[in-house]
Figure 1 (spheres, one colour):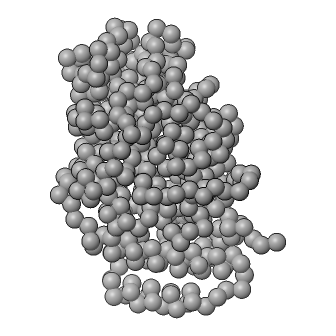
Figure 2: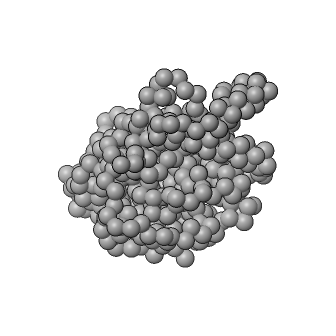
Figure 3: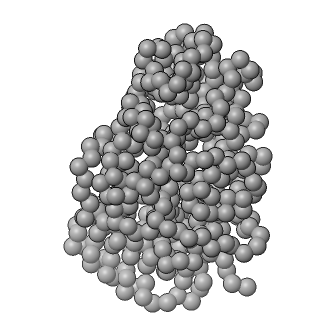
Length: 420
């Protein structure tokens, strides 16, 4: 029986531990997959999907974003009664209608909303909400709320549309960890901090010495290995070296007039813009803005985070317009949960449930989607979700990426008109 690709990776852990020189992203991916449970492959043949030029950029607001102070229900007095110290003053809210508006720290996002380039999906969550960071994030990343998911929703998408092609960078994670969103039987997605890190050896190494070592490594890799796991690791390392060369050329050819803020998140989006400019075939990107677990002293922290989100997304969208790709790129935000309605005694908010999601792009149908949760009918002090997160995923998969959402998500969910 042939050894499956996942089994190659798991057996390759021993080779990595033994000191075989491989790119950092490959070693980290192998270790991540070693710790992951084996996925159960979907039944039936994998459908063929027209990839087109459309790209999805997923932005995780890690920690649990306070949706009530992001999409503010300023028309409801109950909001201010629950938040006498944290409530956004009515006169500062960037009104969308007479009931809700955006935080004053999302001014550039509001301008794009007014131009029809931002959709706000209200009250997103899932049944029987879990307030654990780890469990709730697992639910969002697998798309499975009622059991322990063994594969990620983005990985299942890539399996359905991309595996078996000559593309080696169908998905890419910004950061040092391969997110569970991409875990599956067949996908191998790199996680990188920046383009300089996606290369053999240290970015600070002597270029001449690195070039010599890469040539020597390529010569060694040219020799076929007998054992299947070694053969897979050999081929994967060759692919990684080839992709590193491609991304090095991408980095050299990228210039932008957009002003990105000085933050890790902004650098992640700038790197994504570089790769999109290089047109290397990546279909899905994943970036993270962390720090949203605001149990205490929330006001300034949340303002800073929303300002970073606002300025970074604006610079990225300007880059897409400069590249002529604004119609091809969709950005989708999410967080593992929102915050409780009532502020706590430490000037913050505790883990909650439903939250708003943002969808950005030139090809989307902007405006408010769904219904804002009713502050008069809370569930033990928490918002009751009005939109299932799988409806958002399914609408993005089917409407934007042309993928079989029912198969990827394991069922049919009401669709949202998010695509123009």
